[in-house]
Structures are given as C-alpha cells and as structure tokens.
Amino acid sequence: MIDLKRAFARFRRSPAFAGFTLFLFVVILNILVQGPGQFFGMRNINTLFSKNMPLLLATMAMAVLLIAGTLDIAIGIQLALVNVVSIMVMQQWGVSLLVGFALGMVAALVASALCWLFCSVLRLPAMLASFSLIYIVRGINVLIMPNPQGRIAEVFYKTYDSRILGFIPFSAVFLILVLAIWAYLMRTKFGRSIYAVGGHPRNAFAAGIDPVKVQFQAFMIKGFITGLAGISLTLMTASGNPLQAEAYGLRSLSACIIGGLGFGGWGSMASAVYGTGFLVLIQNAVYYFFDLLFKLIPGFTVTSYWQNLVSDIIIFLGLLMTIVTAKEQREALKQGFVKQFKGGDSVAKQG
Image (cartoon, rainbow, N blue to C red; front, top):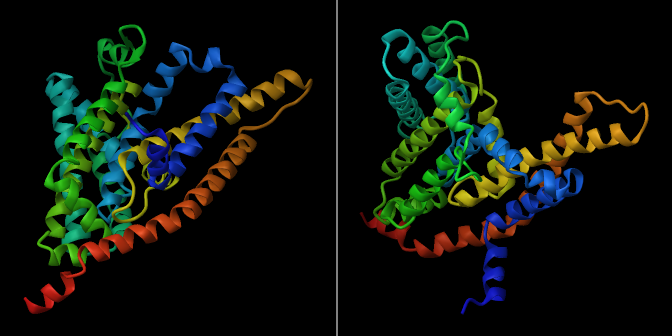
C-alpha cells in the first residue's frame, strides 16, 4: 500500500514541487474566473493543447539541455526552420508533406549539432553562442522562404485540431510521445549520466563519463523534440513563416525556471510541463478576468497593455517563488553529487 504522507513528503523535496504549486494555483484561478464548465469543456481543453503544444515541446527540449548543464535560446527560430523546410520541400519538389516533415526534423538535428559544436566542443558561452545562432538560422530561413507562403492540405490541420475518441486532443500525442521517450531514457545509462554531467562535469569525467558525448546526446534529443515542435507549429498555422516563434527561445527558458528547473543537473521533464502550463494559463486567467470586469462594470475598458502587464507581474512573482523555494534543494543536490563522486578529483590527479 502506498504511503501517501511519505510520497507527498518526497514530492515536496523534488524540483517540480514549486512548479506544480504554481500550476495548481492558475488552474484554480481559471476555474474561478471562467467557471468549471467552460474551463473543462472539451473544446477549451483541445484549444489549450493545440495552440500551445509548440511552446510546450520547445520548453521540454530546453529542459533536456538545462539538465545537461547547457542551453540553446535559438530553439524558437529553429521551430521556424522546421516549418519553412517542411513547407518549401513540399511546395518546390512536389512531394508529400510527410517527406517535408522528415527533412525538417533533419534540419533541427543539424542546427542542434551546430549549437553543440559551439557550446560543448569549442566551449563558447552557451548564451552567447546560441544567441548568435538565432541570426544564422534566421538568415537561412529567409533564404529558403523569403516571404510567408504556402499552405498544407486541410486533412493535416483538421486532424491536428481534432479529438481522439471524442475527448483526447490529437495534439496531445506529441506530448505523450516525448514523455514516453524521456521515461525510457531515464532508465538507461544516459539518464544517469546527464544529471551527473549537468551537476558536476569535472567529477563526472573523473568517474568515467564523457561530458562532451553526453551533451551531444542531449542536443540530439533536444533536436528531435524541437523537430516535433516545428511540425506541431506547421500543423497549427497550416502555412509557412520564416520569422515566427523566435520568442519561444526565451519563453521556454522562463517556463523551465518557473517549473523548477535549474542550470545543471537539477529538475525534471515534469518541471517543464508545469512551467509551460503556468505561463499559458496565467495569460488565460488574466484575459478572462478583465473580460469579466468589462461585463460587470459599465463603461470599463482596458487595453491589451494592461493585461500583459498584470500577466508579466504574476509571472515575475512566480519566478521569484521558484528560485527562493528551490535554493536549498539545489544546494542539497550539489552536495550529493560531490559526495557521490568524492573520489573523482583524486582519481583524476593520479591519472
């Protein structure tokens, strides 16, 4: 029999707890503002998944890199790369969109390998290297597709926006696939190595783990998830745009931090999901809150600026809460890695 008290105590010590708390808060807030009938309605749930799946997948891709001790803020523009490659291959070569998706996935993997080369091999600062990569990928996007254009067959975007068995959003298939793959990877040697490399790369190397190789694997997994995010974006927009989704890079990083992820060996994929859920639902709650005030108060008007301001203030407070609550947990984790590999430094010196 499961000891619920002990299980909850373990969960409270986990990195995802702060993100889960914030996520639960905005879910309750949305229920109060929208009403349970509207919020849990099949159409609303389907819309939340389909419209925000690209951001959710981008955040999960970013989470893999943060756990490995690196990052790539060019993820957003790489979604656009997958989008333009998929559309232009279909449009110019006359092949199936599925072939375009496959080549778009390859493009995402190549971009990820390039970022790995900059960050892990050449050891350039990850923030600066990936920031530079934004302009490189953006230029490639515009070369491939100078202007927004193209349209996919109706069957593709209609299917993406549909529901399986009448209540499961089809777009959720992407989420289930990534979570299943991640659950499998966490049971492999890579699952143990990525946390060791992210938490203390020097001691991990002394213990026989190659940080450069592990980070390459992390970048390839990130590239695969980014490819799925780009496919999701293409199915959602049903067209091509070389400059879309660039802001997803910083938004995904923010969502990771809100969800409880830290830079290097700290956090989980659940943290990414909770963080994205918080970002998406807080904007929903603020929109419906102001809409409710408009209906209740005669003559009440407000611009989108004020809605964004309120949303951003709440998001900032959420960031503060996550950072404060996770500080002691991160210190405990760091000490754990040092103890786990305490003989690492001496072994390295002897070698």
